[in-house]
Length: 385
Ligand SMILES: Cc1ncc(COP(=O)(O)O)c(C=O)c1O
Image 1 (cartoon, rainbow, N blue to C red):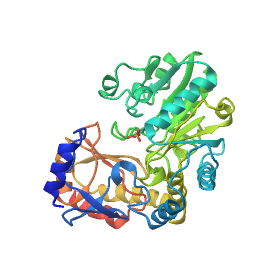
Image 2: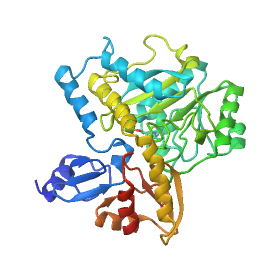
Image 3: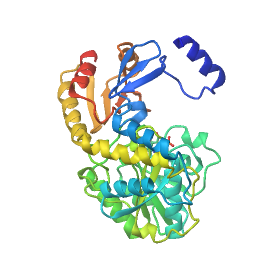
Image 4: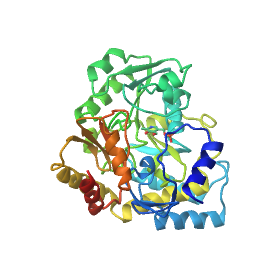
C-alpha cells in the first residue's frame, strides 16, 4: 500500500489522538526501521522507549514464535513454566530486596497496582508524587501526574493525591505525614524533559518514607530494564543505592509485546492476599516468552554496557555541536537541550531520516534508542545536527 492510502485509512477509522510523523513503519531491524515507501530510518526514539533490544531481535522473535506454536494464552488460574521462568529472571536482575513479581499489561496499570498495594500495605489513602512526573492515563495514575494538562484530562481525579517538588526533600517533608500510604517517583523525569535529581535526594527520600511508614514506589517504566546503563535505576549509583518497596515496569520489558509488572519487597508482599489484585491478560504465555527472551538478549549482547558507552560517546561528540546547551540523562535515556525550540531540529532530523522525540520542555529533544544502538549510528545523528 502507498503511504497516502495508509494515512487515509488510519485517519478515517482511527480516532486522532496523536500527532503522527508522516511515515508508515513496515519492518525493523536493530536501530533501523523501513517504511511503506521502502525508505530506511535510523530510530533513535525506539518506538517510545519500548524497543530496547532493537527491532525484532532474533532471540525475542524466536521465543515468541515458539511459544505461539505451543499455546498463546492461559490465565493466572493455572501454573506455567514460562511465567515462572520470566518472573525468576526478572527478580534475579532486580535489587536484592525486591523478591516477587506481579504481571499486568502496561505502565499505567503497573502504577495503579503499585499504589493499590501501598494503600493495602498501610491501610492509608494519601499518595505523594512529584511535579513533572508522568505515571500514565488511567484514573489513579493520571491523578498522580502533576505534569501539564494531564490531571485536567483525567478529571474527576482520584482524591488524596498531593504534589511535592521534584528533587526537593524539604518540599516532600512539608506534605508527607503519618497518613501517607505511598510516594511514587519517576526517577528520571523523561516526558518533562529528562529532569534528574541527585543520588542523595533518593537516599533522603527513602529515609523520609521510612520515618512516616510510607511505601516508596519507583516508576521505572522508562528507566528500567537497562535503559540507564543499569538493570534498574533502583539500587544503582544514580539512586545512591536506594532500593524502593516497589518498582513498576512496562515499555522495554517485552521488547514490544505489551506487558507491565510490579516487583515488590517482603514488606509489601506479606500484605497482599488472594484476590487483592488481578488481571486477565497479565502473565499470559506470549508476553512471558517475550519478557524472558528480552532479559536474556540484553544480558547476552552486553547491551547495558553498550548503553553506558553510547552515552559517553554522545556526550563526547556533542561537545563540538553548536547550539547544544546541555546533555541530560543517563545511558539510552537522553535529553539534548538547545537554546531555542527543538521542534525545527526534530523536523529536520526526520527529513534526514532520523527519528527522535520531543518532550514537554520545548527546548529538549529526547533520544530513547534501542540499547544496542552503535556509536557509528550516534555519529550519523551528530553529523546531521
Ligand atoms: C514513566 C512512565 N510511567 C508510566 C507510563 C505509562 O505507561 P503506559 O503508556 O504503558 O500505560 C509511561 C508512558 O509513557 C511512562 O513514561
